[in-house]
Length: 113
Length: 112
Image 1: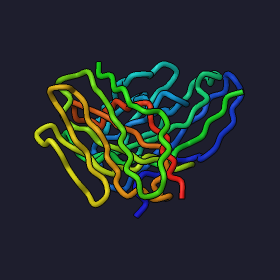
Image 2: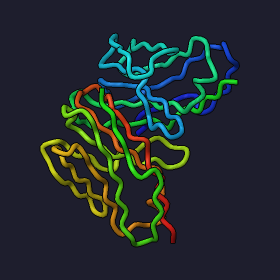
Image 3: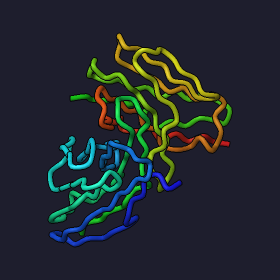
Image 4: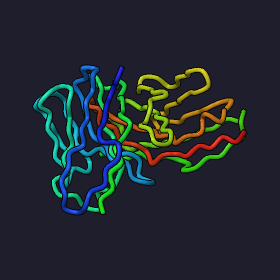
């Protein structure tokens, strides 16, 4: 039972490079989201999706793009990496409707130098 | 938007003692309040949650209380064990879509 799978686990980027963090879930969840976790700040929502073809911005969307072409996948793209994007990124998914359990992936550690 | 404050930021207890972590929220429309435990190098895992139509919920050694009037909710862990050591996050949401607003986290250390 895979749940929410994120790749890569670790990545080092140079400033200005682009990359994509992959997220896949096998629970047929409608909702998927990306959070970043920084020391002393908890987790903050970057982007979210309520279903295939639908995405919207969260609290800290600048510098990130997302797409949702399938129910299973929700990749996060960094177009031009900046040191301020050094963080731990978590993908999450849940079933439709408020109050359903939100499941998190294991995280992707990104360092931008 | 929603703002969630969590206290304390660190908590150290002896094995067998109780631990209490408190959170306040700002948006009276919030109606779902989960608590997550995060171990080193892992993603957050849901340990207990409460909805706004309930004042208290228990699951073995953990319990959560909610005071809607005061807009605060608390996590209570009784008979703590070393394996309870982790970072605990509270969160709140008034919408669906998995949009959670998290507190800043509490580092709980349980000393044997």
